[in-house]
Length: 303
Image (cartoon, rainbow, N blue to C red):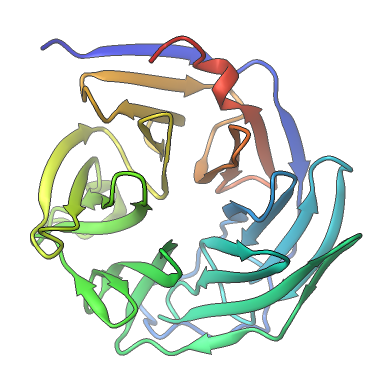
């Protein structure tokens, strides 16, 4: 079947500004050849329909932001660079899972939602077993999980369980779909004969179902693409594409049916998150802001 790609211009959106200076207080990289990134806002997740959590690589912090009241509720210093954040909530209690970049760690934070804000405990550092790059985080059920994209041992780690992809395919992000009872993994292909980051120009989506959890199945490849984060909404898998400065959605029932969301403000998308009301948040990797827009309204009647 022929690929059908529908381009949609994002018109109405909200901007959350978050500018931070580079911190010198976080733990130094385990991989001294990795270099330092000047990335700003790299990760986002929804705690509730109106409370957004964002991660800032440069400062090593996360913030809580009330999108209804347009106000900052608080922040937590992780004392490490960070690229991604996710959260689960049970009543007023919540657990936050953060990646820790080249320090190769995972940071967990417990907390409670209050009538007028949030309350958090001290960050708990989960040491990694090697010098691998903790790139993206997610939850499988209630298990804090992580995608290690580079370093000594690229992998998906769910508690003590480890999933690997074929050589050259680096796990960038994963999303556990409870409805479909399977794990979707997005990877970036790395040409081992070229060491520059520009060699990443193809991404793939893999699927692990409950019956064959340790046998990866390649679902699709996307050329001229670099993925950092994936989410599922309305039977589409959504991800950022840093090569084309866009957000892409692929229909899980027909991989030839694709939606591409663009706007000049989406110039360096990194993290994405979608709340239960269909509001998508996009963290801009080299900018000091987050975009919010109504994804459900944009694609209404298309699937």
